[in-house]
Each structure stands twice: as structure tokens, then as C-alpha cells.
Length: 389
Image (cartoon, rainbow, N blue to C red; front, side, top):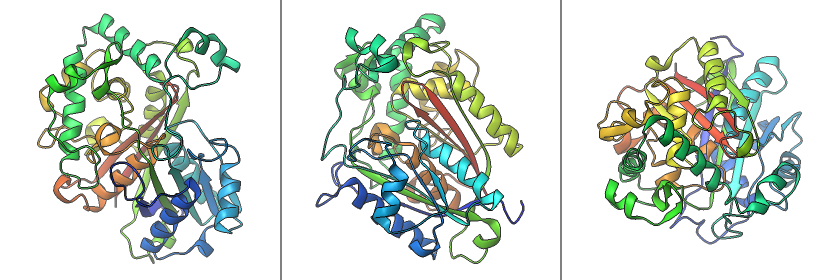
């Protein structure tokens, strides 16, 4: 580690009640609140921020449209480094990598990554609401429910090629719920069984309701700086060891292989290379769980098991509390929260685990964490490897 190595020094997420912001708030207000909370934790203020990374927010006129510019105005800051990258749920893992490079190059000294959403209390989310424009003209008019339809196609293909079962997918939802039961902030904390998942109504065959993520409000902030400055701050710095990103398609019809998440494989390989670590050296894993199939495909692509082995890998509640593969330890997008784009919350939970702040859900002696975000319809992937050092 050098003095310019990037570290995460502050985190915050918005408190929810039944999936909404108590009292209501706009997406901009949510981001301002979590920004100030994360900076206060790090012993910094908005005056220290010279790097701003924002993917766009549900509730803004057009998600992703000049998002960082809009937030800079709202926060009344004039950063010298801006990043509007929006690749869906993987955006925030990309932001960590981009901020790490900016900090190493001296393009900024204190960077903040923000996301805010009033998706549940405000605009909601439609299963078929993607406009029939550009690439989507070849899918939307034919009734493809977005995004769940594309994930269902991938799930069915994986089942066809490898014999994966609905019960194995349900194991992921059940294990994730068990973590949520240990997290007072999680929206869904009732007991859940494999039979419950299979009995829930079908959304897009073979994905049932409980194979699908929640629809909630939410907001998150991550403050990053270099190792030299981090030494003088009150929080325990979490080092960014490696990162990688990739994309293979926008529309599901162009996915190279429905049964293999190529973008995750590329992103993970690069993150491992930079970190000098491999899958066996990771203590806790936070993987985007928009749907149960997202997790299974990601586990295979990131090298935690072989192709076609994901179903067997997650069986027997292996990823639940007490299992030998702790994953999605806050309850994930399936049971904790999912405000449109979830990737920032994966990072926040990983930092809490590495700091030892997980409470009842703390993974013992967690020193390394892998975070992987997925965006679009299995379209983009970004991996970050963090370490406690």
C-alpha cells in the first residue's frame, strides 16, 4: 500500500420504515442527508469534497441525466472531478474503481459516491416500462417484461443446460432472508422456506415473486480518500485492493451466453489480478441479488464454483448464517432493500463487515471482501475487492 492507495473512510445509508423514507423526501434530499452523514463519520465536511460520483437517482427527471452536475448544484460544491457513469446496479462498484484511479492520479483528494431513490414512495416501478427506442425496439413491443423477463430467460437456459432447479434458486432467497432476520434495518424479516418461495406467484417463468428483489426507497453514500489522508481520520480505513468492470450487451437478446455471465467473469478476473488475491482468499461476499439467478450466475463467473455448479454450490443453506460461505450478509436486495439500483449498498455492507460493525450478522475475522454489482439485464458487471489493513 502506498500513500496514494484509495481507502473508504465514511459510509452512510438512509433509514427506512416499511421500505420508505419516514416523512418522505426527494431523491436529492436523500442524497444530501446521507452525504453529510458519511462525511461526518469520516470527520470531513462538504468543503473537503473535490470529487463527486453520481449514477442518477429514481425521482430525478431522467435517471442518469447530468446527475453529478445536479447534485453539485444542490450541495453547493464545485468539485474538480466528476463522474456520471450509469451502468445500472453495477455503477457504484465502477465508481469505486474510478475514484481509486482519480485519487491515485491526484485528480481529487476526497471523493464521495452518492445514490438516492424514492422509487417506492414516489414513482414506483413498472415491469414493462422501458421505452421502445434504440436497441429496445427489438424487445419491448413483443411484451418482454423488463427486466424480469430477461433474467427468466437466463434462468431457464441455465436449468436446461445444467439441470439447475427452482428449489436451488429458492435456497438463495431463503439464506438471504436468514441474514435479514439478523438485520434490524431489513424490510423483510419473517421466516422463509424453500416451499414458501415455490408457492409464491409466478412472475416470469421460472422466477417466482420471492425470487425477485424488493421495491423500496433508499440512499447511500461512500467517502473515499488516499491512505496518507486516511491516517488522520477517525474511522478505520478500508483499502480498495482491486477492481474491474465490463459489459457484453444491453438487450438480453444480445447476451453472448444466457447461461454464463461473461461480463462478471471479465470484471472479476481484473479485480483479482489487481488485488493479488483469488476466490479462496475472500472472507465475505456481497453479490447483487436483483433475482436469485443473478447470484447463481455471478458465483460461477467469479470463480467460486465451476460452470453449471452454482445450484449445487448454494444448496444446503451454504450461504446462510452459520454456513461456510457468508454472502449478502445484510439481507440483500431480496430482503433488506432494493431502491432501483442496489450496488452501493453491497459496498456499504462490505465495509461494515470489514470494520467489525455487523452486530448479530458479523462474519468472524472478516479481513477481505468481494463486492460484485450487476446492471441492466445481466448487461454490465463490476467487481471490487476490499481489505481491512
